[in-house]
Length: 621
Image (cartoon, helix red, strand yellow):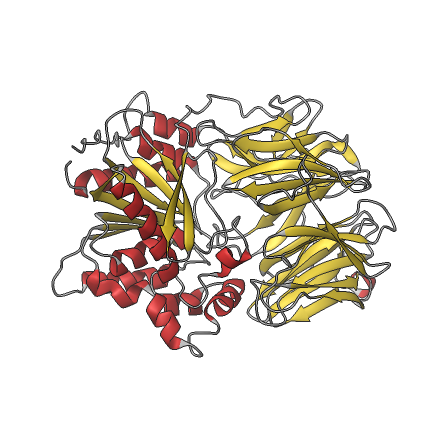
């Protein structure tokens, strides 16, 4: 017999606030980015008065000084190698279109702020800072991508004029800068496929091409970082030549590419995919993050001996990591049950205190495997501590699509568990961490492929008696919001409600309104533009199935969102409301930011709205 979930506490004046609200309001601290030549200095994004802002950070004192005070927050930042300047990207309320600014390390908001780059506003496509006072700046706009070398703070006249290093109408990013600042590695999609980029290395004084590396169609390359030594021409790259993400070192001096083989204690290849890697300061050792079955762990790899040893927590997931200039490794870690912390790998202790109250823990996840049409599908299940199965269930659909849900802490998912819901997160085809073939399997049947895997997991848990099929809510943000709306139309009998945050709702309109790099992403995903392959876009657009939606849906959208713009959402909502049968309820909530919010009050308001919507519309158990 299904249990009735407790009514959500949605009163904004309730005191004390419920645990779900306290979790969202807990102060957040991300991993510092260090000044390479000033080991005590870093830049870090952390909560200040309920909003994520850029901060200066001193490791010796633990002192955090806010550098920005923008109403919708600031989360994109950098620090120069000498630790003299904090850089941050300035857009308009989350629209991601703007310019870089800098200010002296340790200065408060508004003090000493400069416009160091004499280039027009654009979408950011990489910022690389050199010791000689120059910067390599990548920019994307409707004309394509440019990469310039800029004399920082220059007047724009004479020798201060930015030097154009790269220009192409397709998507690209300035990805890595050599230690001496002489070479820059650019990830580009000149073949027209930005899901599988190639690499080009150019000189930073002239833009002259030094070398190209291209593994061919369908095989991605990424430039991770140059070795941290002057004159060292080794570039750490990511590749997928054997069907999964791995590492190699491209020596530009010899033109040789040498694989980095990560082996366990028995001499077998480590399972999973490399998600990120870093050089240690000695240039002889690598720190590698490997994701396997939705858990990301760290490993230390010595190049000379080929030995690989685990580092850091043996459970949960590492979201961010990096070697300190002193050789220690700091990492940002959590699990589904335990909230996020920034800790030292050497001591296991928290190294940056978030301050204030600590968020309450939640429940651990259980692994679920279900047979799907494309192979076994992995999902993570959270089950409430009270009540009995079958549970009302939130089917959580991650964004991306090239992403995955991991065993990590989520205050949003913990809130649903608090209210008696089981939560199942599905790593459908299209997700990372399960090999290149799994990630690329959605191409050709975008959206419909993912929904087949979500349905397979849902059916599996219904058959096991865990999920109440009559009280299953489809929930997602970004690509997950898109799949939520598509699922309500393609699988109308399966879902009781839908909650779609910042979704693609009308794919053709979205394509014409979104930022240029996402247009390039869509062309790679669908095999062309809406003009070139109109039937594919029609088949994959939620708007196509709007007449089949039979359940209430709540849509949340940012008014300045460049990724899933509001206009195409308005088209979908208008079509749903204009139906003659008036069978479905749709509520649209908009807020004054971009693709999501980093403001505590707004995040609390949105989750409260979702809880209230479900309380009003979900059938009683």
